[in-house]
Length: 290
Image 1 (cartoon, rainbow, N blue to C red):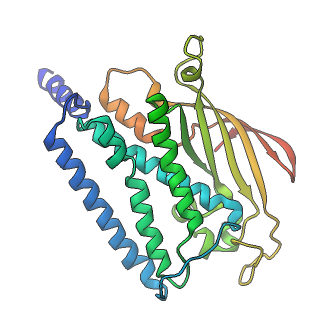
Image 2: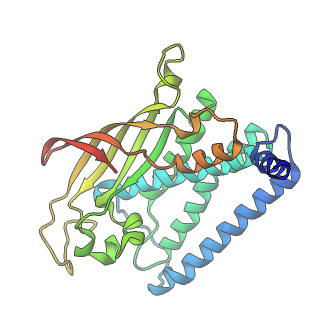
């Protein structure tokens, strides 16, 4: 029993952020992030880009495609990668300024390299729209840290499978693991606002958020060009959502292990009833929305 308590204490201490610079932790973070980024980029180059013809570096204006769902995805990815990078440096005791300079920009740096890969691929191209979205995601994180020293507004993600992926599996994915990343029809991106952080003296629970979501329906291809698509009746439209949410990072606990778990899962919108607004069907109530 004593041995078990000692082990739990050691695990909890490991996950506890350092008050001062812990060089072994900092080195572990830097080496781990650099190695993971390098392996991911090599894997992308070998397993993804190798299947498509190379070209001279070129740009692409794809701002009118996918009802901008892909751009929102870039904002989300840049924000979350930057948040993780900053939090990892905070765990190692790195000062706040360096967390923002070297941690929160890791998402933007990584996605910029991916964008350069796109620029040398005949299938795609370097997109300034994607770059602007990457900057917006990083800016959302950094701006809140500078303004409030906390994340009062978080970006979250939810997903449900749709009928559209089977109509163009090459673009929208074949199977749940691919559709989770590629089927824009099933994706919803959320701005989740923590109410208590804006109304400190209220009786609102510290973990309660309101969330505003954006999604799309009827997307079979990036544009209305539906050649090589099974069903050419593409009628895409935008969807807007209002719902409640929970900021898992604000749930009180003395366990740093649980805090870490909550921090990891806080990228996902907690399922709640939701109101949907769209031009196609007007207002729709979802009992539980994913």
